[in-house]
Length: 182
Image (tube, rainbow, N blue to C red):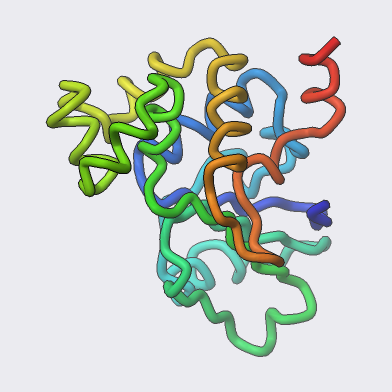
């Protein structure tokens, strides 16, 4: 289970990730609410230097968890030593791409694997979803939070998530998942 600081700086890689996190936040399915978000919003700044300049120089009284929702395992986010004691950086990996949630929801995983395409290309070419990366499309597509949660659960079953790595399911409040089963 992820330990969160007093504030959560949730950095989302793209529009699709932002839509997914917004749906989960809007339905109170995350381990934290909007009230704990730094500046009350999701953040798009991916550079650690820009993040420091914009957010960390404000002088927060509590600890901050930087939650990065992204598909790259290699992208680094290094803060200066002066922030190490107040900031915990956690990467939530959506590799290969967030579009896998749509493929899984459409029950097209086997067809996707045979295609040898990137998930976004498969969605555009085979599922005919042209705006698969667009915020409005993804938010509407997963407007039923149960559909989104089902896709997130399937993702964890189909993916090889390395030990010690976090995925979207790790952000979902475990009590909320239990209540869906009842």
